[in-house]
Image 1 (tube, helix red, strand yellow):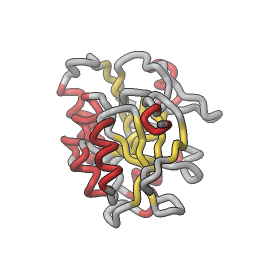
Image 2 (cartoon, one colour):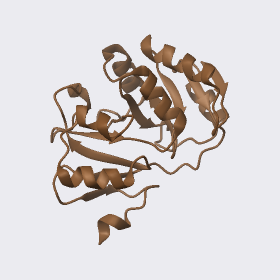
Image 3 (cartoon, one colour):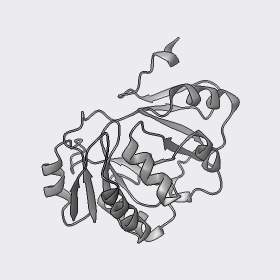
Image 4 (cartoon, helix red, strand yellow):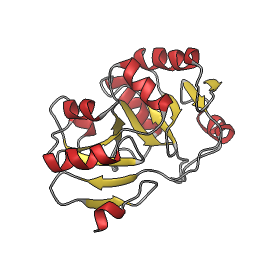
Length: 204
């Protein structure tokens, strides 16, 4: 695994370019977000998606979300109601995963049984730069060990995933609390997981 340490505020573009190249060639990377480290690949590369699901042993039974670059980008991959749009406009980019009705462009492997998908727009420049330069969303699933514990130490992550992943972009320790997950597939929000994102808006 290639391993690069980036400045969290002014990341070195050459390292982001390497990650973009790896993803475009069908590789898998580990990258920082505004919450935890994520495992990522191009959502439209079937081989990479299968490989990532093999690495992430619980991926078949849990929501496998993906990162879009902005709110406009989300509308390409999900059906967004007026209520969902207003809500996401207020909160994104941020530490949330929003569950929305899937658009036909999204690979069926990423659909839930209810024909929904999970979408993130993290408040993290490295993540957003990656997605914008690749031109496609990338998978966003937390980096965990076999017991499901979130890994926050880059050195531990490197030792666990060294032979499984092609490249890692490190910005040091992250806080280790995944995003809040909110279902906006209907006009009544449903909190599926309380995490880093403030959910008080949905409790009024």
